[in-house]
Length: 220
Image 1: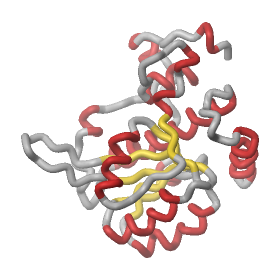
Image 2 (image 1 turned 30 degrees about the horizontal axis):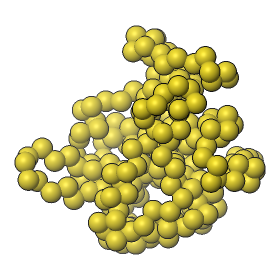
Image 3 (image 1 turned 180 degrees about the vertical axis):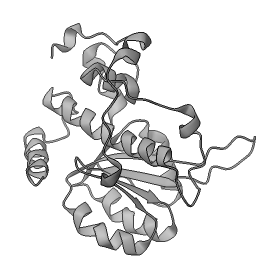
């Protein structure tokens, strides 16, 4: 890819692109208990990198306090894990978020980091992907939909009705589950593409990380 000649596709062009191929529902795990966390702990510990995002029940009234995140998404190349937040689950996830050897990549993570700090959790080894597109000539942050269109020529659907739905509900709808998983999984694919183009910050050891990604994929 010649990044110097890339232009952002128009909205009309994006609509004509093939639809993003998300993970199948069978590869999306909704986690709402500590027992489930413990069952997948070994899987999570083997991951060198996660696609990462969160969802919160929206606040519509003035003065209403944000109590999120209510859902935390971590994705590998094989699965997406959707954690319905509780004190026990947050405590379980703290190990992974604070681990400097497990990289978390995503879009719009500044607000996520703020929410986690309010809960006494520190995020380490986090990469904000929206700011990795200056080499393409984009000085402003790029959103995940445009990033997918630019790198993969696919239409990544973003439904406002789903994004502003109630993420604190006990039983998530199928559209919510697919939407949440897609955000984390797509971030991981974008990171891999940027890594191959050497557009990830120099603080990341590229060679070691590429080997780690290949090792993760070779287990499939």
